Image (cartoon, rainbow, N blue to C red; front, side):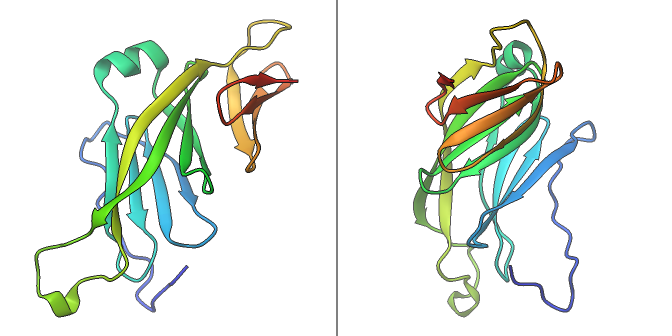
Length: 166
């Protein structure tokens, strides 16, 4: 990740005074930063020029049904993002590159190589544990699986397709 001598730079992330930053993820290639607030998912460039590339704001119905955003995990190869909610739901999103970014100022000063990112909901599933009802506290994973830590001490494994494994 590029850090200029002027670091730390501030980003205007939160539009609402009740919004809370809950998670921050950087991809391995230092191209993007995923910023998760209680109601939004934002994708920013991680290079020299920090520009918002995409955003999705969850609606009131989704927040009431699934709860607020709690934690996220990115699967770069598939271009997929999963969000764990406060009511133990996994919400899956596709990250798709759109057209080139144009900021509307002098062409010489345009950031190069940046594309807009489209975030679209792909599927969702409720976290279940066969032993008993438990709230999901944390999320981790790799390119193949998603691991969920439950408050009762169990670890549950899901696939990136939202299927319970093991």
